[in-house]
Structure formats: C-alpha cells, structure tokens
Image 1 (spheres, rainbow, N blue to C red):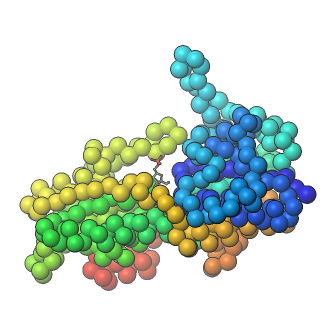
Image 2: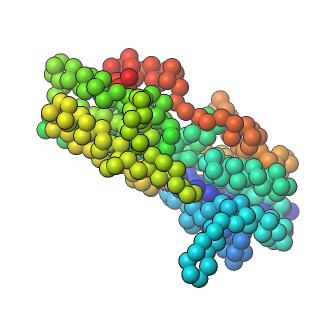
Image 3: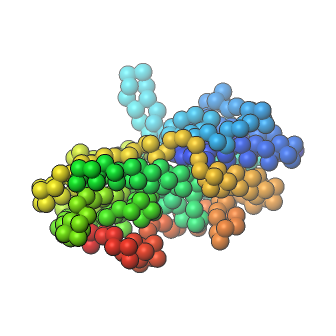
Length: 361
Ligand code: F6P
C-alpha cells in the first residue's frame, strides 16, 4: 500500500485537473493513499499545504481548467526567494528541506506535472534520490521526449476560433488584423491556428521575418481582390537580423518587453509601409483558460494513469510521454536534451506555403 503525492508546476494548462483526477483514481484503485502538494514545491516546504486526494475530492474535475492544487508558479526550491520583514529578498537552496519533508511524510513517490522548468527541477530531485515520475504539460508544446503535451490542443483551438472571428470584422473594414498568440520561443500555436484559421501571414520564432516581404504578400493579395488580411504572430517571433529587441529573461519567469508587444510592432510597420488600416490584438491568457478539449482531457487522463502504473512498475526517474499515439516512458534527461521547435522544413510549414500563406521570409 503506497503513499504518493502529486504537484503541478509552472503556468496552468487545460488538462492539469484531469491528470490529478486520473492519478487519484488509479491510486485509489490500488488502495494507495494520494496527496496533492499545493503551490508547486512550496507545499512541501510548508507541510500544511498538502491535501488528501480522494475520489470524492476529484469527482468531475477533469473538465475544469486551471488546477485544484492552486497557484503553480511559486518558485524553484533550488533557488527559492526568501524575504525578510524589511522586504529584502535573496535566493536560497531549500531542496534539502523539501527532501526532508518528503521523507518525513512517508511518501513513496512524487508525480511532478510541468513543463521544461518543472522537469529540470524534477530531474534534480530524482538525481538526489527522490522517487519521481514526470508528466509533461505546456500549452506551448515545446517539451522534448513527447510528441504532444496536454494544453496545446485547447490553446490552439481557442486561437483558431479567435482568428475565425477576426475574418468577418477585418473583411467589413478592409483591414489588416495582427493577432499575437502565445508559445514562448516556439511557434506551434501560431502555425497550427494560423493554417486552420486561414491566415494570410504566420510569423514564428523559427523563421525570422522581413516586414517588407509581409507587406508585399498582403499587397499582392489586395491586387487579387482580397482587401483584408489576417497576420498571426507568435509572441516569440523576431525580425530577420534581430534589429529589434523583442524579449528578455527576467527572474524566474520570462518577460516580454517588446515596446507595445510584437503584434503592435508588426501592425505599426505594416500600416506605415502600406497605408492600410491595421489593428492588433494580443490573445494572452485566454488561451490557457477554460475546459480542456477532448484530446487534451484524454491525453492528461492517460498521462496521469500511466504515471501511477510507472510507479507500480518501479520505473522511477522517468517522464510519461506520447510516442506514436502510445504512452511511453522516457528519461527526464531525454526530455530535457531537446528544445522542441517547429521544423521550418516540416510538412506543416510546407502545407502553409502550399496554401499561399507567407512566413515573411
Ligand atoms: O509557457 C506557457 C505560457 O503561457 C507561454 O506561452 C507564455 O509566454 C507564458 O506562459 C506566460 O506566462 P505568465 O502566465 O507568467 O504570464
């Protein structure tokens, strides 16, 4: 009869609650005890922040967005910000305390759900002897070792619906609409939603763009009778030559410091070069909210149940992954060894080009 726990790290993604539900049910099925660590690893520093997960607690949560384990962005225990009463803060390595509490509470394994940052932390704990299984999560789909992360399908669907809705308003005013989608340094959300949403231009970090080429494409469309345009820009997209600083790393998170945002920058450049009436918008966290799609829900449930089976089989130190539509186990090192990005020569990009979508290159 094992006693296991689960935490969720990094930003929320639709499907987190489905993982929690599946882990709880699969553990209950084996008559194991399962606990939810709240606030990432912070709950293992403050041991009051742990809740017992039972079938009753998780009943029906798979359809809910967010995570019942609370805010997931509470820092890295290997460099946790610690502040005194005067508000002066310093980063300290509190991993020893996390390990000590984990052992004192008698846990046999931790299921760590998260993206690359969380897998990095999970791997470090695994290397220190903590029995850990990773579950990959991110709307950006940029984690190696798995073909898909849950959250991505939902975020892409929301972006596609937004693009669909932009067509009628753009067309009514002969406008160019520039819409910015999430994805951090990867262009998967922009690429998939842009193709599905019949965009004219898709800008992604993997293919640096040239504003003049974007304008030439849009004006070419105009000559052919399409007087409006939809430009989908990934938040990490950058102009060729890198003459504009579009982002920087800041603290524990990633801050985008484009003056006004990359969408606004692109919109202003298009407007000033073509004279077209142009608007920009940023979809932002809308892409992370609400219920997961069936695909994400099912993938998250499969990942959660597979994580429990991995513990049962003693396969600790691994991450569950999707490979050829089957759930596989990969080492965390494998997951972290690849920075998954859009392949500029891959068939999805080629499909877009065949559909006369420009990447501004
Ligand atoms: O990694 C997921 C993600 O939503 C990225 O697409 C985005 O850049 C970032 O998180 C936003 O982070 P935050 O919620 O901290 O603003």
